Structures are given as structure tokens and as C-alpha cells.
Length: 450
Ligand code: PLP
Image (cartoon, rainbow, N blue to C red; front, side, top):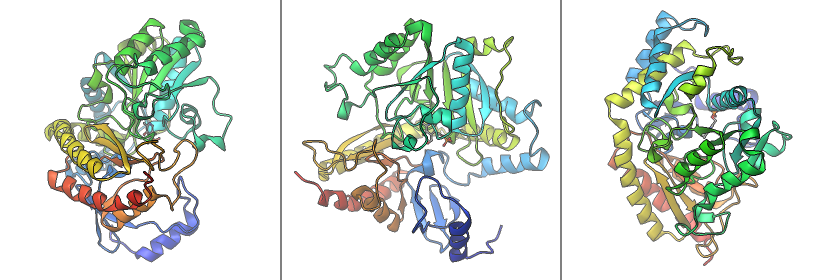
């Protein structure tokens, strides 16, 4: 499609007719995206930007991968849409591929159109197959913005819409840098995991608690990476109390952390895994709720009373199958692990140099730098549970400077700079992105107090 509107007209139409998510509208002057290729996208004036967060952590294959684009256009030419009661080649293939790359006996998937819907499906399935209603989730989590998914989180983004869906109980998160239990790893007896058991017991244990849901590494909450023992212990606890373990792999899935899925780092098989984003590298909206054989088996007799008009949409299925095959063909999971080590080295160098970098963490190409006002007090650059960072905070000024210098990093809510480039990023591209961030860190450094 050749452009008929210039950049100013596009901004004007959007300004008047489109409500942009997650922000007040006054004064918005968004960059007009025109085209994209590999790790780069270009604005209407032709300026190039290195995409250092894969948009909202979804462009795992980079932009405009020709194999995925061709699969979508071939599907569009042959059968652009058909309802979910029909079998299609691309749906069958994607279902089979997901069964192959997910751990253990996770064999069947329900398809929706995004991460929130994938979690809605998981919540309903957990209640349906267990006959119990309570679901435990964590503070600082993010599972999506529909009502059910939103209820699984608890921060300023919910307040205007409360009361949320009943039956969700929150527990504390495994945040070693700011341990909510006031203890220090490794001498902490992994309180954060044992606390999950305490909450399960207090809420009625096996008789009352249906499920525990968590991101393997908390993404939007600030790349919060649990201690090594956390996930195996949580799996044991859920088994002991007959609680369904749901891993939200919406951000951590599809090679992002240097393994196919986040839980693969700990050899844990959850009962359900929710996915979106990287499953189609973002080219077509798609969510998936994948389940172990024992759950799928329940639906042999029990009707699965849930679905969407676009469940298993033909274009999304074609995109998903082609995307998974492209990850395999290009060995991108291995590349993410290798490049992740390189990125971590570079983050260490930035931490040595910049006092405002309080912590660095993550796995593979799922990394973050936490910004603080003081390394001694660990006071964050803004309190992420209470409000979004305002434009005048040092973090937002840093991101604006990076954008001006041609490096895009998504804003996010936490006091963290998220570093999640596409899985096929090169060393040179990492060097370039990190040198721009290096210069921009002068902004939070100037507000540093110690
Ligand atoms: N779960 C996690 C961990 C996420 O990071 C997100 C989105 O960022 C979601 C769920 C919601 O996905 P969606 O925005 O596709 O509904």
C-alpha cells in the first residue's frame, strides 16, 4: 500500500479519531511508523530506529520476516477465515508444533486472540476442571487488561475499575532486589515460594484453591527473576495441595529467555501455559492456552463452554505455524541464549559505570536495568505499584533521548529499562543500542543522590 496521507495528516486523524491505550491523550505526538525490516523500523520521514524491545516484546523474529508474511498472504489467498468448528491445515499444524515444543505432556491448545484472552481461558478451565474457584496470583504481576486477567494483577492500573473479578487472592512476589520478606538470598530458605504454600493453606488448601498463576520471570512488573529454587518448589507445593499451576508465558515464551519457554530453565511442567506475542512474532493477533493431557482429557466428556468468534483464526494459525518453524530453521532459541550472555556482559559494564543502575537481571534476551535514586537505600526512580512514570521522570526522559538517538525502548510501568531486542539481533546491533543507552544514563545519574 503506498501512503496517501503525510505524517502530519496521519497524526491529525489519529488525534481526532483514535483513542491511544494507556495514556492521557492531550499533547500526544506519536511517531508515525511507516515500514519495518529486521531489527529496525522507519518513520514517515524515513528516519531509522533500532527496535530494542521488539515493540511490546512481541517481534521475536524481527520485522517483516518474509516466510511469515508469505504464509499469511498464501493463507489469505486460499482461505482467509473460517469458523473454529472446522479443521484447517494450519490450525492442525500449529497445534502439533506447540505440543512438540512445550514441555512434558502439554498436548492440546485452545486458541484465542491475545494474552489476556489466553489467561481468561486458563482461569475458566481451572475453575471448570477443578470445581473450585479460588485463584492465587502475585502482586507486581501483569496478565492482561480484560476483567478476569486484570483481576490477577493488583496495582494502579486496576483501581478505577474495581471491584475486580472475585475469587482472586494475591501473594507476594519473588523480588530478590527488594525482598518483600526482608531476607537475603541464598540464606532465605526461599521464603517467597514457601509463602505461596502459606497462602494456599490459609485459603482452604486442596479443598478450595483451584490454581496458582505466575509469569516465570515477571516482565511488565520489572523483569523480576526468581531465585533458582523458586519454580521447582512452587511445582512441589501445587502438587501437594492439588492446585493447578499456570505459567503465563505471554512474554517469556518462544525463545525470549534463551529457551523455548521460561519454565524450561527450571525443568518444570506446569498444568497450563498461556501464550501470545512471540507465537506469531506479533504479525497477527493470537493467544493460546495450552494444557496437560489430564486437563485435555476432562473435555472428552465435559463440554468446553468457552470460545471466541476468532478462535483459531486462519491467518493467525498460518502466521503461528510459520513463525515456530522459522525459530527452528534459524536456531533462534540458541541465538537468544548466546546474545543474552553478550547483552548481560554489556549491562554489567553499564552498571559499573552508572550509579543510577541499581540492579541488572533477566535471562536470555529478556533483560532489564533497574534505575534507583540511591544504591544504598535502593529507592526506585518511581514507585511502580502506585502510578505510571510521568514524562518528567528520569526514566521517561532517558527513553525520549534514546528515541531521539534512534533506539526504541518501550516505556513500561516499572522503574526498569527493558532490553528485549529481536532474537536474531547481532552483536553490532547490541553494541549500538547499548552505546545510546550508555549516553542517556547521564540523565538518571544526574538525579542520583549518594
Ligand atoms: N501476560 C503477560 C505476562 C504480558 O506481558 C501481557 C502483555 O504484555 C499479557 C499477559 C496480556 O497480553 P495481551 O496484551 O496480548 O492481552
